[in-house]
Length: 281
Image 1 (cartoon, rainbow, N blue to C red):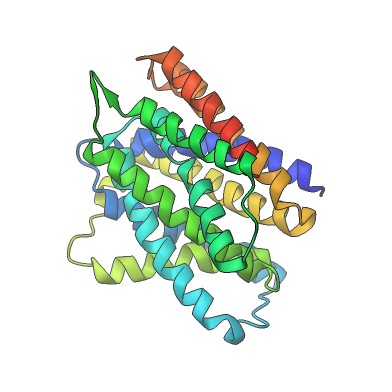
Image 2 (image 1 turned 90 degrees about the vertical axis):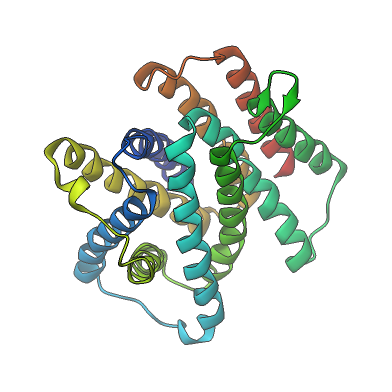
């Protein structure tokens, strides 16, 4: 498989997964933490079957124990924030704000990996920030709602997680890592919030019809982007193409979830975020 094919799978799977996650999270009787645990653990079980058939590859895990500990923290808290955000805000708005994760990743790479920061990257950063502010502009002032703040925190956490994950994937098997990145944070979150977890909501027929596909597409998106990086070793190119999911999500959300308020502004914001991320790359 080429990295281009892996990236195409990511764009399709991520966009579809985002719509399904929003359609589940927005229900009044759905608890975001319970949803986070359910989706992560089910994804871990699904990947566990695949890894079991192919074989685990844990070589080098002890040398990377600190990075794995950081992965558990960032993915665990990040997923809680993601579903709290999707509970409150439309997926089209979430996907635009989420592009700040790229800004976070670039800043982290500069700070931790001593990479250079070019003028074009400054312009890109500004465009991404403008896009995020456009979708949070309320009447005559900029105001972040609770859901939008969760979306912002999600972007920051997963931006940091991406840098950490990329470091691990330099010397660790992508399939095994994806399995661990879903299962361990999900189980640990379940243990911490065990008194609040309620999965009975997700056992209803209508919920199961969305939970299953949401898990499959989320796994496909995460695994394909990791594989794309491992095959291509070209982070700049992949980073510049993957944000097209933002425009795809905005369009699909308008069609399937009827998120049609302020469509022109959302499309402009999405386009600005994509251009900004391209310049950041």
